[in-house]
Amino acid sequence: MFEHVQPYAGDPIFALVDAFNADPRPAKVNLSIGIYFDAQGRLPVLPSVQQAEARILAAGGAKPYLPMEGDAACRAEVAKLLLGAEHPAIAAGRVATIQTVGSSGGLKVGADFLKTWLPDAAVWVSDPTWDNHRSMFEGSGFTVNSYPYHDAATGGLRFDAMLATLRGLPARSIVLLHACCHNPTGVDLSPAQWDALIPVLRERELLPYLDLAYQGFGDGIDEDAYAVRALADAGLTFFVANSFSKSMSVYGERCGALSAVCASAAEAELVMGQLRFTVRRIYSSPALHAAKIVAHVLGDADLRPLWQAELAAMRERIGAMRRALHDRLVARVPGRDFGYLLSQRGMFSYTGLSGEQVDALRTQHAVYLLRSGRICIAGLNDANVGRTAEAMAAVLD
Ligand code: LMR
Image (tube, rainbow, N blue to C red):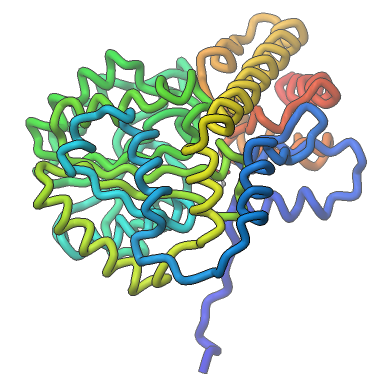
C-alpha cells in the first residue's frame, strides 16, 4: 500500500534542533530555531502566564469544545492587540478574527480559504522567507513566487526592486509580508516604506497577507503593529496571522489567530463563515487552554502590564546580545562590516555566512545556525557570546 511513499527529508529547522539535542559536546550553542532563551539559556515561563494558569486552574470548570472560530474573549483581545482597542474597523465590525492553532494554523486556514475564494491568484513571498511559507501555500495548491527583499551586499532591503516587482503583479495576487522582525533576515520595512508600499498594494489591487509572529520583539508591541494599523487605516482588505508562541513563551500551547480586515461588516461576516467552515474541515476547533491563557493575560488589568514588561525585557536582552556579538566581532575581525547585527531587528539576523562556513561552525565549534546563515540572537547569552564570536571569526578568517 505505501511502498511508493517518498522518504521525508526532514524540516531544515526542526532537524537542526534534533541534531543539536543529540550533540554530546557540553559547550554547544543553539542559534537555530526561533525560540527565545533567557540569560541562563533556559526556555522561560513568564510569570504573567504562570499567574494566568494558576487562576485558570483555580476556576476549574468543564472542558467543552470551543466553537470553530475559537473563544470570543480571546478573539476580541487579539483584534484589539493588533489594531489598537479604539480602531474604527473593530467598531464597524469589519474585522473577522478566529483563534487558531498557533499562527501556522492561522496561515494554513487562510491559505485554504484563499485557494477556494481566489483560486486563480498566485502567492508572492519575500526572497528569502521562512521556509514553511512556501510549503504551506504550495500545500494549499498555490503557485508561490518571490519578490526581491534582502540585499546581500548591504545587509538591508531591496525596497525599490520590491516595489517594482509588486507594481507588475496581476490584480488579486496574494503578497505575503512580514509585519515586523522579518524571518529569516531581521530586515524590516521602516514606517515610511510601509507608507510608500500601501498605495502600490491598493492601486494594483493586491491582497496583503501579513505574518506577525514576533510582535514585541522589534521596537514594542504597538510599534511592531505599525503595518497592520497602517493597512487598516488606509482601508485595505488584508489578512494577518499572529502568534503568541514567542511573545508569551507558550510554544507548545499553540496560541495564535487569523484576522481578516474587510471592506464592510457584511463582507467580514461572510469571510468569518467560510473561515469557520475551513477550520471545521481541518481541525474542527482550536485549543481551550490556549484561548484561556491569551484572554487572561491580555484582558487582565494586572497581568497585561506584567506581560508587557516581560516582553520588553526579552526584547532588551536580545538588543544587548546583538551589541555584544557585534562588538566582539568588530574587535576580532577588523575591516569587516558587522553593522547588520545592529540594524536588523527581532530574533534573527542574516550573517552572510556560506553553507560551508555554517557547517564548519557546527562540526568544529558546536555552534548551530541555519545553513542559510540565519542566526537566532535569542540563543545568545553572556556565557556563550564570546565563544560564538570566536567561532564565527575562525570560520571567517
Ligand atoms: C523559526 O523560524 O525558527 C520558528 O518560526 C520556528 C519554526 O516553526 O520554524
